Each structure stands twice: as structure tokens, then as C-alpha cells.
Length: 408
Image (cartoon, rainbow, N blue to C red; front, side, top):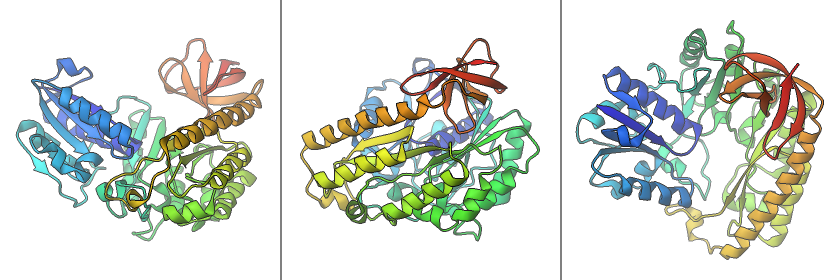
């Protein structure tokens, strides 16, 4: 039997898919990358954005004459939408083989062990390692907490062992992923910085990409966390969502930090690593966001100068507290997201322009000669390259989303 997987959402969902593929392959199924060739279709869903949710539901409805298994956050939040299909929740993905064999409806929320299965790695140099499930937040706009639950950190020794095994098999880049890496270990008397310190001791030439962390958690271990990034093995890359440049909007969202907290984290990292790449997230048009609040978000982006910015128009998600708020007119949220994107293009271009004629050590981590600098900037390298190899690259040009360079 042939199985096709289709995945939506974050790198944690990607990790779950690789985990399931490892189980399915071990049970004798054949993984295919074409839906038409498959007997079974597994759809790993996301519930962050309404637009994505609608796309997923249409996609599932369009699949004819094949067994369909649905998993991921959308299943956990809205199981009633999938009454006639096999469904497995976020913490029941270890039941994927049974779901492929027959009719299964498993929404068990008991955390399953995801580090003792060899995942099916599509990119031979990138290993996505889940370090925890759930979070410690209670954001008024977010449904993910309903799906992933409260924080459950994986054992540090198991993570290091999993990383060692992946590096031994040829991985060159480790992605530490979770709903919020910043709170990793708070429930088991450790933290993210200590995990990074243990990982960089592994005797291989590799890089670590630390996934998204919230500012309030970074603050709790800030000096230790900054120090853990000192190793060349850690990408100087920080994905730290702000969501709004206004303290009043952050309070309404029930985010547990202020703008000054956020700036303190950024300043602390930039003091040690001036060229660190900063990525952040902004929600445009939250119901309590005034024009003045939005201007504060623009000013924050001018100050931050990110080269990675995830812009989301606010969509009210059922079952959340923000769903009860009166939404802004759609034209307002659309225009604000447009204005913010135009500003982002300018500040990211200005940042990238400063890299021209500079040389960097680049790890080729994607096909088509694409690689990453030490601060995780994406580089298209001219000429022939080998996946998983490091090259010295001089930046010659820039585009809107990446650098362009040649080997030196």
C-alpha cells in the first residue's frame, strides 16, 4: 500500500509528519510524493489561520476514491468536522499505522514519545527535533493551546541522543522546534540554554537553528541564553514574536510581556552578536488596535529592522476570547498589512544591502545551491555546490528575500 502525506503549518507539524512517515515505512508501507499514486492520504492540519483552515477542508473534500486519515491541530480543535474519516490527534500520531490499516478515532491527549522513532528525513542534512509540546501561554486569539495543551518538555538526554544519531547519519543542521522553545524545560527543572550547551558539545561540524521563543521566557534566562549562542554551531538567528508594537494591544491579547521587555531581549543579543538575524511576527488589525497603536507597530519595525517578518491579518478564531470582540473593518486590516509589508521590504532591503561584497561561511542546506550564513540568511550560490558542504561565499547581489553570492 502506498501512502501520501500532505502537511500544513509549522515545523512542529513537519516533525510530526516525519515521525509518522518513519512509523509507516517501518510497517511496510511505501511513502509516495504524489497523491494520484497513493492508496492512502494523510493530511496533517493546522488551525492558526482561518484562510488555511478553509483551504484544508476544501482539499480533504476534493480527495476521491482514497482512504483519508486526518491529523494535526484542526482535528484536535474541531473533531466534529471529520465524523466520517479516520482521525488521530496531535498526541496520537503514534497510532498512524492503525489508522492506515482501519478506521481509527483517537484524540487521546496523553503525550506520546516522539524521539525514539527514526523519522523519514526528506532533506538528508536537516533534522527537525521536537523538544516539547504545548505552551505556558493563554493568548486570547490563539486556538493552538486547545490542540497542543500545556507544556510538556522532552527529556534533555533523549534530545541529545536523538541529535547524536541524526548527526552520525549525516545531518548537518538541527532544527529545535516546539510551540515555544523559550519555555523548554521549565517543567523538568532545566531550560533551553542548558539544552543548547549540551548539544554544541557533540563532536560534529553542524549548525543549530533555534525555533520560535516568546520574549517573556527568554527574559527568565537571558544572560545564560545569550551565552549559549556563542558557539559557531548555533545560528545567530532569533525568532521572537512581538505581535504588536503597542503595550495596550499586548495586554488585550494577554501576552505576558511589554515592548520594553522585548527590546531588552533584542538589545542583549545584538550587543553580543551585532549581525544577528531577527525574525518576528505582527498581527494587523487586532480588534482593540487603534490607528495610534498601529503606528507604534510601524515604529517598532523601523527600530528592529528584521529580515524575517510574518504578517498576519487578524482573523477571529472560534472558542477564543478574542472571538467575542468586535472586529475591525476588513478594509482596515488589509490596508494595515499592506503598509506594514511595504515598510518591511524597505528595512530588510537596507539590511541585506550591507552584506554586499562581504564573505561568509555558508552551509548548503537545500537543493538548487541554496544555503545559510552563520546568521541564517538565505544565500543563492552561483555554480555547482554539494548539499551538506560548507563554502566561503562572497555576496554580490541581493533580492527581496535572499542574498546572491559566488564561491571564493
